[in-house]
Length: 300
Image (cartoon, rainbow, N blue to C red; front, side, top):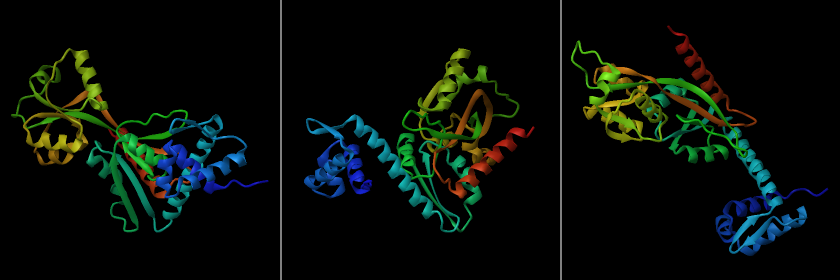
């Protein structure tokens, strides 16, 4: 029985990913003729063509699409093997991707249990959810932290764990003593800072305002929680955000919480892929986050 040549399979995977022989050859630093020869040998071994030419582009045949799915799984598993081996030193390296708009305070809360451990190396990277999920799929990241769930499809199923649910509040400059805040009465008169429209918080807030027939005076829409936090502190406006984002400002009295917004909250997720071996360090962090959330829910 003949054995599969993984070198040929890697060349096929590169060409299929690029959809173009010339670009794949440049990426692999080989000649087009050498690359074509490798693909041809794989096709001869499998007994069927893997590509159809459409102009300058290459399209996968039905068998080519099947082989591509196997190749992606094989090379992803290889990346997982390398990551697992690398995590064997000390407690290991944990590679975390976080959505760029995610609260920095939340990230610090999640990582707090290991921040002072000398034998733990953290690699923290940010980006869009789509970018981070692609890197997670290739096992270049161990986990992605997000305030939006990842929706699976027939090609990829993500494992979404709920880490925490945080109330969303209105905060602003300290109000005169004795003046109570009433959401429906006082909201329309406030100069408001809100998350951008691609935020789950904003979606829920807009639906609430529509239901209550309120027309808030929105001064600015901000897609970055760090910037929203700065504007809430310095602009003299009222901001809509999770309480954890302005935890320090509230503690120092720089900002005052006016109210908890009804029926609006932010959910934080840890997204992973199915893998043979989940790093023990990540298992510990996920377990501690779950325990902390359970305690907060159980508290009166």
